[in-house]
Image (cartoon, one colour):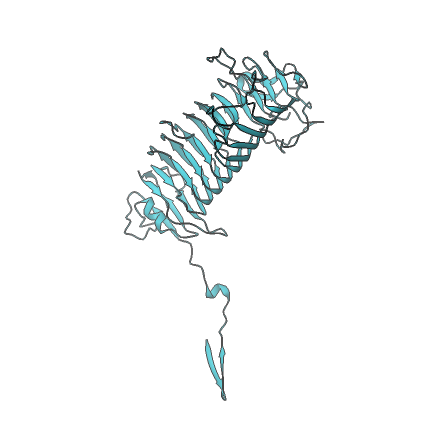
Length: 429
């Protein structure tokens, strides 16, 4: 500030500078980690840090932590956050490098992008997004985890994409990918395979969740699962996923007194499961309520879901409804073909209230619901090769019903309604 005196009047004249010049942001720092590094060094490209933990501890908003190839055997717990307006902290493997560590937990930190890491041999969960806001988890892999490979818990605005989870839940904890008590989560373009327990579970108070374009296979229990457990859980959409070689394909349930509501399974392909391809279940304690409201199964394709069971094969089939506390169940435009015992049925004594089951293409024997549905041979392009698109001349072409919630694209990403009307099943011809 410049002080000037004119006669007996003293004026203070401020030297005004542009805002950017007054409060210039520090340049983002590129931090590097390598097995031959030193945490006492500067963490630069030529003098990297030795540990991921130390590198992430020093990171500030807009900084990046790039990790060079190697097995770091670290249990990393993040301690710093990024910030709004594109100032996330990026934690990433160096391009083309395989980086492995024991576990990683966001531990309440926000505005993070984590990409390209492999987590193996953790003591419990592989990658945990816990109590965090605006986290992006990309191109990561987990393997050999006692509990979940990826767990999103008490978090908001999370995207998990292009991740691979295998050999999870080897000691029985949680599910392979668990999303619980979280809001605004998207899980997309990922693969869950060769695991124990469930594949992907959205549960226990989670809301506004989208699970799309994932592949879930060779899973011990359910492939895709929505379970309210003991909390209000809803606004969940499972779309354009491929599920096969699981115990059950797509399941809605409330196991312990909560309320599951507004769940849509749309455009999924389910095949070769041991039990039912799709299900409204009533699992859990006999002393608990199992409330479900407004769950829809739209334009899914379910093929060859059957297999032996203790009940002589009854617990099988294309679509099984066995929850008399469920209300507002919609089963429309699904292809149900070659499934064991029955294609579309309600378990004796356990019918949901207000079932709408129509416009489905049913191809197979059993105690099927046939009124309002089309009972004819499906005609796939090549079922033996697992190509379940409708072949020319299939009765499912241009035969679907227009209902809310179908979406704009099919399981292959093609626009819905290629002809006069929507096709039945996951694919448009």
